[in-house]
Image (cartoon, rainbow, N blue to C red; front, side, top):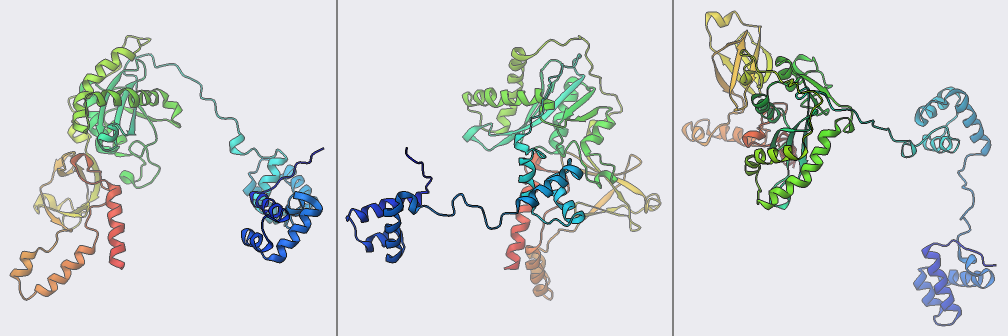
Length: 445
């Protein structure tokens, strides 16, 4: 009966060389060079091969117990202790408690393996996946609108990757609003939501993921109340925002994204569309055809959309709003710019009062107190010394030149926490941060 011998590739190569040596096809020196060992070791391998065959060239350590293996008695004690006291503990936490309370010091990875063997712990890969039960569509049109941004190579190799903002009605499956943008940001969602409201009215609620535009866990947003700018705007419009716990929870819009990534990409390829502007011009035509093919009839004919109220100014609501304290010198700082409020008897009374800075979609800035606009002038902290000033003032020329060189090494970008301006063709916050790191590295060289 033939025995099966487990061998590594290195050991197989040894067998081939030693067999050639025994067959006198090579000499001991050639065998030593091929195996990268000494002639003495070749003779030892040759002797073992003649006596035991291929088994004589295998490692004697294979299958043997490790010298660092924990005793079986210790393993039994540890597992018994875990069963009695820490049965529902995770391996790392149980390892800490064994060290603190029982003076048993082992690695958490060793304990993890032991617990898996004893079926006290189930690895994540072996756990049963959560079952996501399907839910019925909402009854009424406009009751729930699912929104999402899909980052994809929409123009394939004809243009850069961009994001498609999608608004779909849960009851009917209709595409109600789509827009191509460079990336998901507060202002891009402001713009798309405004178009949606002007065309369809106010829905009962929006259903989204946990993108930072819709939800934040950080304190400091709008005074620390945990509300984003988009959430504040919807609150003023009396529209709820619901964030899904998983992508499967908003599966309807995810499936539509997958359909669009297939059909819409090919439609734009046939029309040779390669820019965001051309794609946005084509979208209304595509939406009509898409809704004819894929829309469903709602359970109820009632339209839950509400009309906009007269006092709801979308320009004001869909602006970036931050509160600031007016200093005693009647100044406000926002995005590294100091705004000098016009000095008057009326404005002097507002010192140390909280004012609101309105940053609009087009870049316009307004400062208001109790909905009253305050006149101001600008003192830009990032204003640099230009070459004309150096030439005109000869006495300070050398000093100003030195200052100008220092300014070139500084971070001359606006605050990274300010609203994204990609819709105006400016760089993204991510690119700003990259450039800041590069400049700092160069300045240290």
